[in-house]
Image 1: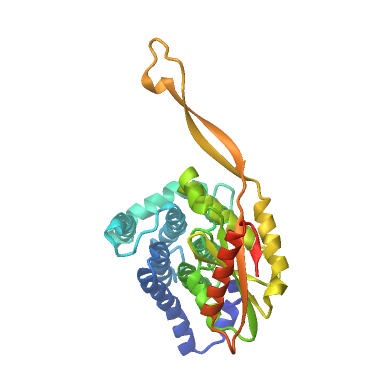
Image 2: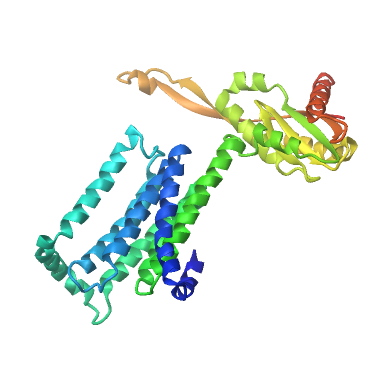
Length: 398
């Protein structure tokens, strides 16, 4: 994003036709983001692109003259205040399709702000705008020639950027990176507003970031398992079509998982799946981990024989078996009835914590791309997996 600060000097030496194309480029990119966000059900990115598109056109159509002319200064402050505020608001709103009925309230919020902006910039409202600027003028020049209000707005922008950065760190949503880039684009555009081509540069980079975010999330939705955050079966199938030379496939299954689910509940079962996936992701030997389905996982080792991988698989098996998986279960406790106590007071809930052992069984088979079909290798590994279970579980069978 900061690279955009160095682009304006290069834009200045381009021909007039090329410069005209550059001015239009952010509009095209933001429209593309809006269209893709609709088809890929990523409404928040679409709303962010819509906000940036409107802001960019306000800058190009309304703010290319000195700020002292008419209501231009007021429009500048209006834009600097509302654009980051709306982008931060989107971070906290649930995902809604851009053109769905549920997103109607979002449209109402943005349309109301647009209507207020349009009303203020009408010529007949110029006296009111001048009076408003006169009211805040003491704040602007309170330190002599230093303009305090832009510093206040800059402080709000920095708070918005920090909010997006903190959310990005804690909730691990890939689209937050695009929102952070959009907020940085706003901030850097405001800071360097007098520099020619700065808005074109920053908003173009922001549009590209939003576009890449949509493509990245679409890839995750297609190939990454939502629960365990490792590649799913579709990603495995693509890998299997691109095999060359020798390889081996390991099929892994969590022992007694159905009984575990029935005893402790599906939420605990999901936690087990996530724990197993996180431990499997540390496998050595350049193995690629996939969720095959249910409680079954797959590890693909390229360029290796089955015996080469047994040691790596045993390490994972032992790592999971030794993992202290803790369960915290609510247990209802009835206290002695006291006079005047209601039923709710007499029934209190306490929790018990215990550590359980989770184990996996593994079957591994090898193949060669020129002579063996990957599906046959998977079937062979699956048979070895069940052989491992019949032999007592918590072992590798190759």
